Amino acid sequence: MYDERYKKVQGSSSLYKNLATGVVINTNEEEIRLARQRKKISLEEKENKLKLESEVASLKDEISELKDLIRGLVGKQNGI
Image (cartoon, rainbow, N blue to C red):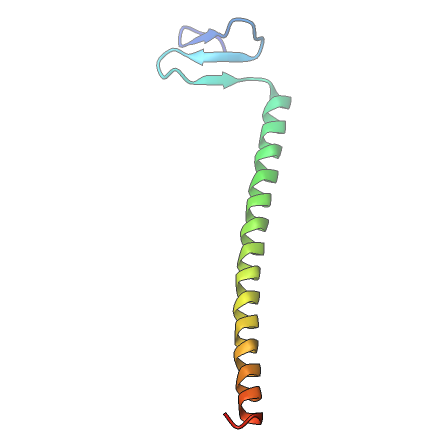
């Protein structure tokens, strides 16, 4: 991987810096696999959080509708 476009990052055996773009490239396959796994888990957690927030909002709406129906029934029984 090492040529004139890349310079090895001092103190690391698997990091190289692209001299044209400044991007640091990791060549350690295990670190890359673990980073991808962490990213996947993080995205799944965010999706789950959004799903739960949506479900809670939906339940709040349904509870509000039920309250309104109960108030309406109670009002009819009391002759209001």
